[in-house]
Length: 347
Image (cartoon, rainbow, N blue to C red):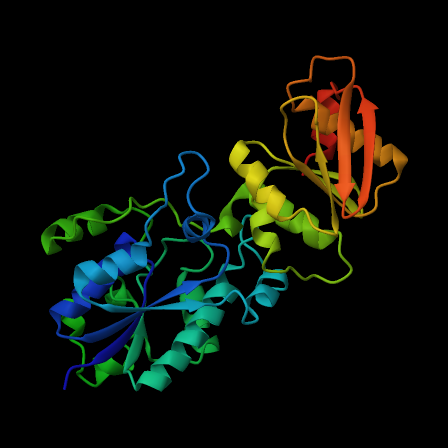
Protein backbone atom coordinates (compact mmCIF):
# COMPACT_ATOMS: atom_id res chain seq x y z
CA UNK A 1 0.00 0.00 0.00
CA UNK A 2 1.35 3.45 -0.94
CA UNK A 3 2.58 5.74 1.78
CA UNK A 4 0.29 8.64 2.69
CA UNK A 5 1.83 12.09 3.25
CA UNK A 6 0.39 15.38 4.47
CA UNK A 7 2.13 18.24 2.68
CA UNK A 8 2.50 21.73 4.09
CA UNK A 9 2.59 23.68 0.86
CA UNK A 10 2.66 27.33 -0.15
CA UNK A 11 2.66 26.77 -3.89
CA UNK A 12 6.21 28.10 -4.11
CA UNK A 13 9.02 26.30 -5.87
CA UNK A 14 10.35 24.33 -2.88
CA UNK A 15 7.04 22.85 -1.74
CA UNK A 16 6.10 22.13 -5.35
CA UNK A 17 9.35 20.20 -5.91
CA UNK A 18 8.94 18.32 -2.63
CA UNK A 19 5.49 17.23 -3.76
CA UNK A 20 6.69 16.14 -7.19
CA UNK A 21 9.54 14.09 -5.68
CA UNK A 22 7.06 12.20 -3.52
CA UNK A 23 4.66 11.72 -6.41
CA UNK A 24 7.50 10.02 -8.29
CA UNK A 25 7.58 7.47 -5.45
CA UNK A 26 3.85 6.88 -5.72
CA UNK A 27 3.05 8.59 -2.42
CA UNK A 28 -0.60 9.46 -1.84
CA UNK A 29 -0.70 13.16 -0.96
CA UNK A 30 -3.05 15.57 0.73
CA UNK A 31 -1.79 19.16 0.80
CA UNK A 32 -2.64 21.78 3.40
CA UNK A 33 -2.14 25.51 3.12
CA UNK A 34 -2.24 27.64 6.26
CA UNK A 35 -3.55 31.22 6.33
CA UNK A 36 -2.20 33.13 9.31
CA UNK A 37 -3.52 36.60 8.56
CA UNK A 38 0.02 37.82 7.85
CA UNK A 39 0.38 36.47 4.30
CA UNK A 40 0.81 39.50 2.02
CA UNK A 41 -0.51 37.86 -1.14
CA UNK A 42 -3.55 36.23 0.43
CA UNK A 43 -4.43 39.41 2.29
CA UNK A 44 -4.31 41.30 -1.01
CA UNK A 45 -6.62 38.68 -2.50
CA UNK A 46 -9.12 39.11 0.31
CA UNK A 47 -9.04 42.89 -0.09
CA UNK A 48 -9.79 42.54 -3.80
CA UNK A 49 -6.39 43.15 -5.36
CA UNK A 50 -3.00 44.81 -5.05
CA UNK A 51 -3.05 48.52 -4.35
CA UNK A 52 -0.55 49.37 -7.09
CA UNK A 53 -2.39 47.78 -10.02
CA UNK A 54 -5.72 46.47 -8.73
CA UNK A 55 -5.01 42.96 -10.00
CA UNK A 56 -6.08 40.08 -7.81
CA UNK A 57 -3.11 37.74 -7.23
CA UNK A 58 -3.75 34.03 -7.58
CA UNK A 59 -3.64 31.59 -4.69
CA UNK A 60 -0.45 29.71 -5.52
CA UNK A 61 -1.31 26.73 -3.31
CA UNK A 62 -4.55 26.09 -5.18
CA UNK A 63 -2.80 26.66 -8.50
CA UNK A 64 -0.16 24.10 -7.56
CA UNK A 65 -2.79 21.62 -6.45
CA UNK A 66 -4.52 21.94 -9.78
CA UNK A 67 -1.28 21.56 -11.73
CA UNK A 68 -0.17 18.45 -9.83
CA UNK A 69 -3.57 16.87 -9.24
CA UNK A 70 -3.32 17.17 -5.46
CA UNK A 71 -6.16 17.88 -3.04
CA UNK A 72 -5.53 21.12 -1.11
CA UNK A 73 -7.18 21.92 2.21
CA UNK A 74 -7.12 25.60 3.23
CA UNK A 75 -6.73 26.03 7.00
CA UNK A 76 -7.29 29.42 8.67
CA UNK A 77 -5.07 29.81 11.75
CA UNK A 78 -5.81 33.48 12.35
CA UNK A 79 -8.49 32.81 14.98
CA UNK A 80 -7.07 29.72 16.63
CA UNK A 81 -4.61 31.10 19.18
CA UNK A 82 -1.97 31.79 16.56
CA UNK A 83 -1.99 35.54 17.22
CA UNK A 84 -1.10 34.94 20.87
CA UNK A 85 1.95 32.99 19.71
CA UNK A 86 2.98 35.86 17.43
CA UNK A 87 2.65 38.42 20.22
CA UNK A 88 4.44 36.30 22.83
CA UNK A 89 6.86 33.89 21.11
CA UNK A 90 8.73 31.49 23.37
CA UNK A 91 11.72 31.39 21.04
CA UNK A 92 11.79 35.09 20.17
CA UNK A 93 11.73 37.04 16.93
CA UNK A 94 13.93 37.07 13.87
CA UNK A 95 15.27 40.28 12.37
CA UNK A 96 11.90 42.02 12.39
CA UNK A 97 8.65 40.72 13.93
CA UNK A 98 8.91 37.16 12.64
CA UNK A 99 8.61 34.47 15.36
CA UNK A 100 9.61 31.82 12.84
CA UNK A 101 10.38 28.94 15.21
CA UNK A 102 7.19 29.38 17.24
CA UNK A 103 5.22 29.81 14.02
CA UNK A 104 6.56 26.57 12.54
CA UNK A 105 5.92 24.64 15.77
CA UNK A 106 2.33 25.90 15.83
CA UNK A 107 1.76 24.96 12.19
CA UNK A 108 3.43 21.56 12.51
CA UNK A 109 1.30 20.78 15.56
CA UNK A 110 -1.82 21.52 13.51
CA UNK A 111 -0.43 19.39 10.69
CA UNK A 112 0.07 16.57 13.20
CA UNK A 113 -3.62 16.80 14.11
CA UNK A 114 -4.51 16.47 10.43
CA UNK A 115 -2.10 13.53 10.08
CA UNK A 116 -3.83 11.76 12.97
CA UNK A 117 -7.27 12.55 11.57
CA UNK A 118 -6.35 11.25 8.13
CA UNK A 119 -4.36 8.25 9.31
CA UNK A 120 -1.37 9.43 7.27
CA UNK A 121 2.22 8.20 7.61
CA UNK A 122 4.11 11.50 7.72
CA UNK A 123 4.05 15.26 7.24
CA UNK A 124 6.36 16.88 4.72
CA UNK A 125 7.47 20.41 3.86
CA UNK A 126 9.57 22.14 1.21
CA UNK A 127 12.09 23.36 3.79
CA UNK A 128 15.76 23.35 2.86
CA UNK A 129 18.51 23.01 5.45
CA UNK A 130 20.25 26.37 5.93
CA UNK A 131 18.00 28.33 3.61
CA UNK A 132 16.51 30.56 6.30
CA UNK A 133 18.71 31.79 9.15
CA UNK A 134 16.28 31.32 12.05
CA UNK A 135 13.95 28.40 11.38
CA UNK A 136 15.96 26.22 8.99
CA UNK A 137 19.17 25.73 10.91
CA UNK A 138 19.84 22.09 11.76
CA UNK A 139 19.13 22.62 15.47
CA UNK A 140 15.95 24.60 14.72
CA UNK A 141 14.61 21.92 12.39
CA UNK A 142 15.11 19.33 15.12
CA UNK A 143 13.52 21.54 17.77
CA UNK A 144 10.45 22.18 15.61
CA UNK A 145 10.04 18.47 14.90
CA UNK A 146 10.24 17.58 18.59
CA UNK A 147 8.07 20.39 20.00
CA UNK A 148 5.31 19.82 17.44
CA UNK A 149 4.97 16.16 18.36
CA UNK A 150 6.13 14.97 14.92
CA UNK A 151 9.38 13.29 15.96
CA UNK A 152 10.26 10.81 13.22
CA UNK A 153 7.24 11.82 11.14
CA UNK A 154 8.41 15.12 9.67
CA UNK A 155 10.08 14.79 6.28
CA UNK A 156 11.98 17.46 4.33
CA UNK A 157 12.38 15.75 0.93
CA UNK A 158 14.77 18.36 -0.52
CA UNK A 159 17.27 17.96 2.35
CA UNK A 160 16.35 14.49 3.63
CA UNK A 161 19.78 12.91 3.05
CA UNK A 162 21.37 15.55 5.26
CA UNK A 163 18.96 14.83 8.13
CA UNK A 164 18.23 11.75 10.25
CA UNK A 165 16.02 9.13 8.54
CA UNK A 166 12.32 9.41 9.29
CA UNK A 167 10.13 6.50 10.35
CA UNK A 168 8.60 5.96 6.87
CA UNK A 169 12.12 5.79 5.43
CA UNK A 170 13.20 3.28 8.06
CA UNK A 171 10.06 1.21 7.47
CA UNK A 172 10.70 1.18 3.72
CA UNK A 173 7.62 3.18 2.80
CA UNK A 174 9.89 5.80 1.24
CA UNK A 175 13.08 5.28 -0.76
CA UNK A 176 15.68 7.50 0.90
CA UNK A 177 17.93 7.24 -2.16
CA UNK A 178 15.33 9.09 -4.21
CA UNK A 179 15.28 12.00 -1.77
CA UNK A 180 17.75 14.89 -2.01
CA UNK A 181 20.59 16.61 -0.14
CA UNK A 182 20.09 20.29 -0.99
CA UNK A 183 21.28 22.91 1.48
CA UNK A 184 21.99 26.62 1.64
CA UNK A 185 20.36 29.74 0.25
CA UNK A 186 21.13 29.27 -3.44
CA UNK A 187 18.18 28.14 -5.55
CA UNK A 188 20.31 26.82 -8.42
CA UNK A 189 19.73 23.15 -7.52
CA UNK A 190 15.97 23.72 -7.26
CA UNK A 191 15.83 25.50 -10.61
CA UNK A 192 17.68 22.64 -12.28
CA UNK A 193 15.37 20.10 -10.60
CA UNK A 194 12.31 22.05 -11.75
CA UNK A 195 13.53 21.83 -15.32
CA UNK A 196 14.12 18.09 -15.01
CA UNK A 197 10.69 17.46 -13.49
CA UNK A 198 8.87 19.70 -15.95
CA UNK A 199 7.79 22.22 -13.32
CA UNK A 200 7.46 25.50 -15.20
CA UNK A 201 4.68 27.51 -13.54
CA UNK A 202 5.73 28.76 -10.12
CA UNK A 203 6.28 32.16 -8.44
CA UNK A 204 9.83 33.45 -8.51
CA UNK A 205 11.54 32.79 -5.15
CA UNK A 206 11.44 36.00 -3.14
CA UNK A 207 12.10 35.06 0.47
CA UNK A 208 8.50 34.51 1.51
CA UNK A 209 5.38 36.70 1.60
CA UNK A 210 4.91 37.33 5.31
CA UNK A 211 4.21 40.81 6.69
CA UNK A 212 6.15 39.86 9.83
CA UNK A 213 9.43 39.66 7.90
CA UNK A 214 8.96 43.19 6.51
CA UNK A 215 11.04 45.85 8.28
CA UNK A 216 8.40 48.59 8.10
CA UNK A 217 5.60 46.33 9.27
CA UNK A 218 7.85 45.01 12.04
CA UNK A 219 8.40 48.50 13.45
CA UNK A 220 4.66 49.16 13.50
CA UNK A 221 3.95 45.76 15.03
CA UNK A 222 6.41 46.24 17.90
CA UNK A 223 5.26 49.84 18.43
CA UNK A 224 1.66 48.65 18.79
CA UNK A 225 2.48 45.96 21.35
CA UNK A 226 5.02 48.10 23.24
CA UNK A 227 2.32 50.67 23.96
CA UNK A 228 -0.19 48.19 25.37
CA UNK A 229 -0.54 46.85 28.88
CA UNK A 230 -1.11 43.36 27.47
CA UNK A 231 0.88 42.06 24.49
CA UNK A 232 -2.11 41.17 22.37
CA UNK A 233 -3.07 41.84 18.76
CA UNK A 234 -6.46 41.41 17.14
CA UNK A 235 -7.02 39.92 13.69
CA UNK A 236 -8.58 43.07 12.25
CA UNK A 237 -5.53 45.13 13.23
CA UNK A 238 -3.17 43.31 10.86
CA UNK A 239 -4.32 45.07 7.69
CA UNK A 240 -4.32 48.43 9.47
CA UNK A 241 -0.69 47.89 10.50
CA UNK A 242 0.19 47.30 6.85
CA UNK A 243 -1.64 50.42 5.64
CA UNK A 244 -0.55 54.05 5.56
CA UNK A 245 2.04 56.18 7.34
CA UNK A 246 2.02 55.67 11.12
CA UNK A 247 2.96 58.40 13.60
CA UNK A 248 3.18 57.92 17.38
CA UNK A 249 1.97 61.21 18.88
CA UNK A 250 1.86 59.97 22.49
CA UNK A 251 2.04 56.63 24.30
CA UNK A 252 -1.72 56.18 23.85
CA UNK A 253 -2.27 58.22 20.69
CA UNK A 254 -1.39 57.17 17.12
CA UNK A 255 -2.08 58.74 13.73
CA UNK A 256 -2.40 56.71 10.51
CA UNK A 257 -2.37 58.64 7.21
CA UNK A 258 -3.33 57.07 3.88
CA UNK A 259 -0.74 57.19 1.07
CA UNK A 260 -2.92 56.25 -1.90
CA UNK A 261 -6.56 56.20 -2.92
CA UNK A 262 -6.55 52.47 -2.27
CA UNK A 263 -5.25 52.96 1.25
CA UNK A 264 -7.89 55.63 1.89
CA UNK A 265 -10.54 53.03 1.00
CA UNK A 266 -9.00 50.57 3.46
CA UNK A 267 -8.77 53.16 6.24
CA UNK A 268 -12.43 54.06 5.69
CA UNK A 269 -13.30 50.55 6.84
CA UNK A 270 -11.60 51.22 10.16
CA UNK A 271 -13.28 54.58 10.84
CA UNK A 272 -15.55 53.39 13.62
CA UNK A 273 -16.68 54.53 17.06
CA UNK A 274 -13.20 53.95 18.50
CA UNK A 275 -11.17 56.02 16.00
CA UNK A 276 -11.27 59.63 14.85
CA UNK A 277 -11.62 60.09 11.08
CA UNK A 278 -9.68 63.05 9.62
CA UNK A 279 -9.83 64.61 6.16
CA UNK A 280 -9.36 67.97 4.39
CA UNK A 281 -12.83 68.86 3.03
CA UNK A 282 -11.66 71.81 0.90
CA UNK A 283 -8.78 70.04 -0.91
CA UNK A 284 -7.96 66.60 -2.18
CA UNK A 285 -5.94 64.80 0.43
CA UNK A 286 -5.51 61.67 2.49
CA UNK A 287 -7.94 60.04 4.82
CA UNK A 288 -6.42 59.60 8.27
CA UNK A 289 -7.34 57.91 11.54
CA UNK A 290 -6.42 58.78 15.11
CA UNK A 291 -6.46 56.10 17.77
CA UNK A 292 -6.73 57.11 21.43
CA UNK A 293 -7.84 60.33 23.10
CA UNK A 294 -5.61 63.18 21.87
CA UNK A 295 -5.40 66.41 23.82
CA UNK A 296 -5.65 69.77 22.08
CA UNK A 297 -1.95 69.99 21.20
CA UNK A 298 -1.98 66.48 19.79
CA UNK A 299 -5.09 67.27 17.75
CA UNK A 300 -3.30 70.30 16.28
CA UNK A 301 -0.24 68.20 15.48
CA UNK A 302 -2.28 65.43 13.84
CA UNK A 303 -4.17 68.01 11.77
CA UNK A 304 -0.93 69.66 10.60
CA UNK A 305 0.47 66.31 9.50
CA UNK A 306 -2.69 65.44 7.55
CA UNK A 307 -2.68 68.89 5.92
CA UNK A 308 0.93 68.38 4.84
CA UNK A 309 0.02 65.35 2.71
CA UNK A 310 -2.89 66.98 0.85
CA UNK A 311 -3.04 69.37 -2.08
CA UNK A 312 -3.17 72.29 0.35
CA UNK A 313 0.35 71.64 1.62
CA UNK A 314 1.62 74.97 0.19
CA UNK A 315 -1.21 77.03 1.66
CA UNK A 316 -0.88 79.09 4.82
CA UNK A 317 -3.90 77.41 6.39
CA UNK A 318 -5.87 74.22 5.75
CA UNK A 319 -9.12 73.09 7.37
CA UNK A 320 -9.02 69.55 8.77
CA UNK A 321 -12.33 67.92 9.69
CA UNK A 322 -12.55 65.47 12.61
CA UNK A 323 -15.40 63.00 13.05
CA UNK A 324 -16.03 60.09 15.40
CA UNK A 325 -19.56 58.80 15.66
CA UNK A 326 -21.74 61.84 16.30
CA UNK A 327 -18.80 64.01 17.43
CA UNK A 328 -17.52 66.47 14.84
CA UNK A 329 -14.96 69.28 14.86
CA UNK A 330 -12.79 71.32 12.51
CA UNK A 331 -9.34 72.82 12.98
CA UNK A 332 -7.67 75.38 10.71
CA UNK A 333 -3.93 74.74 10.79
CA UNK A 334 -0.70 75.45 8.98
CA UNK A 335 0.59 72.29 7.23
CA UNK A 336 3.57 70.82 9.05
CA UNK A 337 6.80 71.62 7.21
CA UNK A 338 9.48 70.34 9.62
CA UNK A 339 10.95 67.07 8.34
CA UNK A 340 12.72 66.46 11.63
CA UNK A 341 9.43 66.48 13.53
CA UNK A 342 7.94 63.96 11.11
CA UNK A 343 10.98 61.71 11.39
CA UNK A 344 10.82 61.79 15.18
CA UNK A 345 7.14 60.82 15.19
CA UNK A 346 7.15 58.30 12.34
CA UNK A 347 6.89 54.67 13.41
